Image 1 (tube, rainbow over the protein chains, first blue to last red):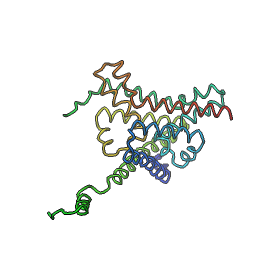
Image 2: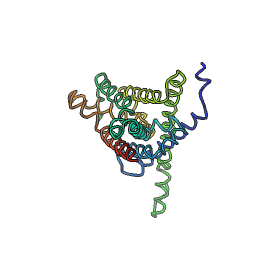
Image 3: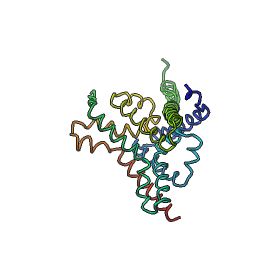
Image 4: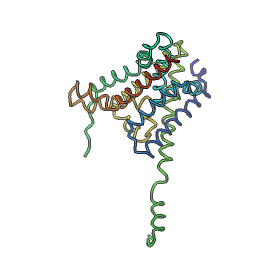
Length: 128
Length: 146
């Protein structure tokens, strides 16, 4: 159980608070505006990509770890980060390759598990 | 019950009977559930790094693991129950993105595997990918100029 001893509890607390706070922003948008959840997700991913592109989001990731990368803003920031890194390596073409490449694992997993789930699960019968 | 004669009394009664400020309760639930999901991600991340993985790969493992868990919970119809309680707490983390793909995939199974599952899967995730990827390409193009 070396791993449990190695856990940085302060880091975990920062992660919890940051992740929770980002969710509160989403909850306020849900409750106080008429935005649908799809639009809120789009707003979060776009905001994340812009903040990531400006290099601001990286500070939040350094501070909160998964508290910043797990919310959808982190997904957006990861897309932007991948695009920028790829541009540095191979130039303009990298803008089209880097973003998706950096997030490929998540996107592919979501599609694959979605398909598998549809094979295994039954649609729930809506009660009238 | 006392007689209601004025608007003021009525307002007071409504205030007493209605649950006290649901937005605070919603925010509290979103906060701790969202924080908990991120903390689970952090523990997986720490474990992967502890096992000697590099940070980028570990971060991908976290995404895949959380997506797999939410796909499982969605197909068992547990995710929706947590989602009703937590609101944005499950929507905003990557679990919400996974749920937005898995849930319609299951729901539209009856319309066939190609246009039902394959097509409807992206009703919510499609816009997210369109705007996310487009923004990242614009960011990349700007970065290549400077």
